Image (cartoon, rainbow over the protein chains, first blue to last red):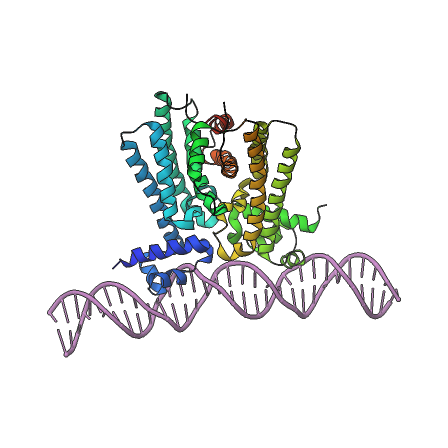
Length: 191
Length: 191
DNA sequence: GTTTATTATGACTGACCAGTCAGTCATTTC
DNA sequence: GAAATGACTGACTGGTCAGTCATAATAAAC
């Protein structure tokens, strides 16, 4: 039997993913967690706190995933590919919730994001830093081109976004991962 | 003297960009447009209609831009680069409003997006189709690798997003456009 | 079993705000 | 000048919902 707090979080993830923060009510979340509305406030200070908790979880999971990848004995190229694969996996785990974790949206609900923004910046800085380190090492070993590692890191994060977006835009599309990987690793230009 | 409707739209763009739809009130928009709140309803049916109008504008502008690029007598490679450059320009024109136009967010406020989603899908399908046609032509002429054009099109859209995101994450970063272009056109892998 | 402590509940409250519409005012028409 | 018109106004209305807290239910202690 899942702990109440965990049920609340899971209910909230689903609902935030489906309806976003503003269209999800505390009553909705409570119903999904099979508790009364007032119970929510035994576990969370307020509605934004639930949102923040979920975001933090996701970001922590991303960093943990990066840590594991860092420790693998594989080439930097393989590490980058693994970052993308696992990144996609983590994001897909939250179904349609990915806008919650998108740094692009941090300015998009000023009040709500006031408390969340520092968290976002902190974790994203770490994520980018870690990826950039892998890229840097790959540049050093001659695997990668000499590009700005920070730029490449953000670029890589957006590859994950592309992979998540594609099935959304075109559900019939199959086997697109290879094409994404190909364009990413080898570029679009033919020689 | 700007027409009232235009003032309303401009005020709304600013505010939606700064606070998002839900934290922006009709009163805010009215104040920014220097009209009374009730006046808004002389020009727009309701609050979501303002939002929809803005989104439609942006999407139309994007398509118009694509049309112009299509007609240019330049290589497909150059067309793709131009798409990115102009795409960035269009998106930056709306400052922080870009989450408004991000297809990623279409599931994120279920009620609000109900009316907007078909619009989004329609325009985005056209945008992707147009870009994919350019990529396809580039593949035919031998400029580009043999990749799925629709995948490449979404990929290109996300390049624009990367370029917009970078200064947001790291305001000190300079001259990142070349690195993005390099990775995109030539890939990350060194040979 | 009774009493006490702890947890959960859901009706209530009040803040908020989208949309409404009676009233105002400037301009036009008769 | 009087009446009509249309654009604009902002107080009002009613719906929504986050957060509260007196009460109920359950668990623990005796």
